[in-house]
Image (tube, rainbow, N blue to C red):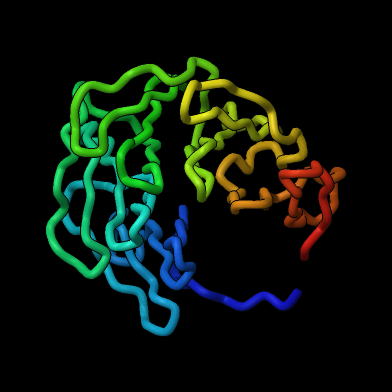
Length: 219
């Protein structure tokens, strides 16, 4: 596999989230001097979406791919912003939110983490309900919306998932590189992650087939 640079700057760029059509990436960056939300289109230079004191975390796309949702720890609130640009709009979830969020593909629900518990709340705002106490972070939704994937803690080698309908939780793999808690992504058919390696070896990405459990190195 040939790799190419998609996002780069002399400052830290991190937490990329690709749009449903794969043509845009929302990411966090210090390239403007503070932690802000940026957008990179496939054939255009990155552009800044947020400004000021919000300090966005955990960007996630809505199902239509026209908005990005993020949390802001200083306010303990969740916001949505149009990907083409505009002012952030608060999502009024009762009690505020923590750092990690994701949205169901039909934009009915928003999922969030409080003290490692995963909660579900209406996307239009309102009271959240506990989905599972067997949670972790970050939260990433399967494309069909059936599962919410997460890592149990920052140094875990396990990726888990919870069923969005009833909170049933199960381990998917224990092959994640410990300490690389955000180095993974999920598609409709596979899980891609930085795999565990022997001491002194280079870290390598790996793809796991979600139907069979088989895995292969991809780079």
